[in-house]
Length: 365
Length: 260
Image (cartoon, rainbow over all chains, first blue to last red; front, top):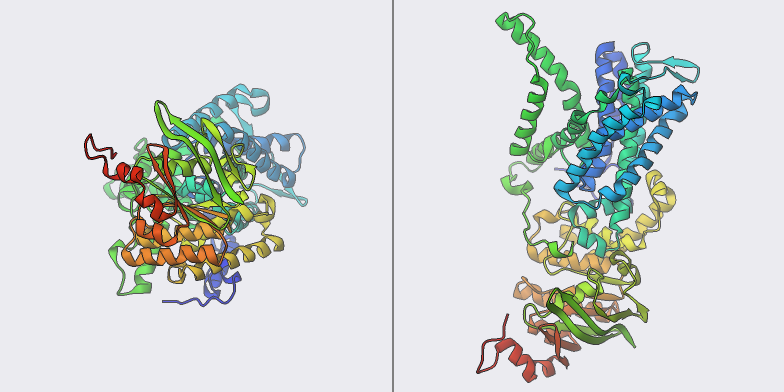
């Protein structure tokens, strides 16, 4: 087991707990940078997909994992990001300006939407955000002059520093654009968590009454959280637009919202790691299912067998398994395994058990 | 000079008068206790001061400023901190993070500077941590510093909640049953801490407490409430000997017991 001797307050403020931990993450970053030379174009595309999921996942994690406000409507905000980015680029705004602007606009839209919606709690909030997701699809169809209606939009080609970038033409360049956006979101997220605002988010998640008694403006902080969450989601949406090439209202349907929520639950609520683990599961699972299907078909000689809805079924099964057996998600499982080895042989089964408190002062919420 | 003043405060929940025309003053540097049987309206008075409830009538002033126009989250910025009867800590955070939330009222940074974690934010963060570490030192919480609340025993949580209130650097500390659920030793520690809070830090304390040992040991004045009404005010000994108070707790010899 490692003991970290702290000598100054900065030891608690730093991004990394100790040097070795910093090395791990630098190695991971190096691996991410080297990835285009390690993978072929197809798998690099899949990796880009995972990164886009991770950006959106961080967005939702901030809201649901850290502020404790569930949202089933984040596909709508991905759509806002994708459409504003594409519409601006069609009208001649260069990609380098359109992408951050798309994030900003989504953030503002999110904040405005949040003000009435975040007055609701728990299941009511879930239903209200679900309604946003359903509404967004209709609004996309109605706003045809901008969105192209049912036929959708094609993401305009990206021109960056005199270079043409597209997902199929130059997968490496597109991968790096995604990686840079991801690192920027990660940088902001990690900084917020060690600052007063990040602690206010966690305070609201765990107890609204006492957050208020400590001077946190609940309504404002929730709206800020929703806005920041939507900014990250909007950036992911804009990138998804380019990744998909062409998109319409069906790209951003309710299933995407549910997948986003699924991703952070599977990954582990309340940690940035969880967003990444979840993104890997959601991003790679369709491939794993496809490979599994090929293997079983060839094994039993069934030809090209397709079972409709198998993907949704497998997702649902995984979610059920996680909620039953590992509510803390993949990251929680990893923490348990690590603690087991760190404390060996003193690990106790109840170590991560949460004591349920039924005495919360509900009356003064 | 009185730091906190309640004048003829009344609060009704439908037909029930929870707080009935209550007035009292808490002087600066004083330790003041509200006592009374269950349902007497003690915690309700706390929630009125915290602005969780709006009184139907009356006025509440803190350091000669009216409290009633404020939102609940603006109350701490005046220098009022509180604890809760049933412990309201941030369960999925560490002790250190819980205490740091107490610094919220002193946070001057905004979202943009925090996203970039500018040197100014870092400087402020160091200052917050220094205050919090002093509180940890004072309450001897070093062993639990990086532990999550969810795994801590009840007695420690109670102290962490006191620490979180102290981290706000308050002028007035509202303690809602600081000794409930504590063992004899823990209660004794609590008595020492409340005395130190009063003497070393010069913080005024208003508390709700059932444990008369603690009340007699630390309180300068006591107000007894029953059914939302004032019964008696005075030193702990005076109030304990007051016939109305004895009646409220034990009931009268003849009629139905008045205890609820």
